[in-house]
Length: 145
Image (cartoon, rainbow, N blue to C red; front, side, top):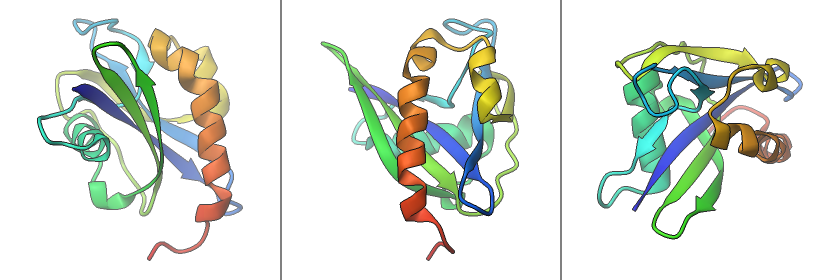
């Protein structure tokens, strides 16, 4: 099985990624007090995209219909995997901490992400994830269908 999380990005009118949605993890959680993407374990039969969107809805109040999924990045371990689903806003998302797993959920300017106390695995993956999101952005501009 595995886990999945959603890296949701916001773009300006020119298509440049300006912010990403991050979760400040509850202190009692594993590696609590760090920032990362909303996510968690996938349920049986659930795809990574379904799991990431469900977790983002549960933890950050993100309506799955407001997300345009553009890419997935998989980190494979011997007995499990973690998939970061990359998406953009289809409509404005007003996140909020909707369960006890989050101290807060916020849109963070892209240039401020490295300065936060990040979940170590997310800190390691951040440069690659941002590169993938930027690469997906130009082909996704325009009004969503």
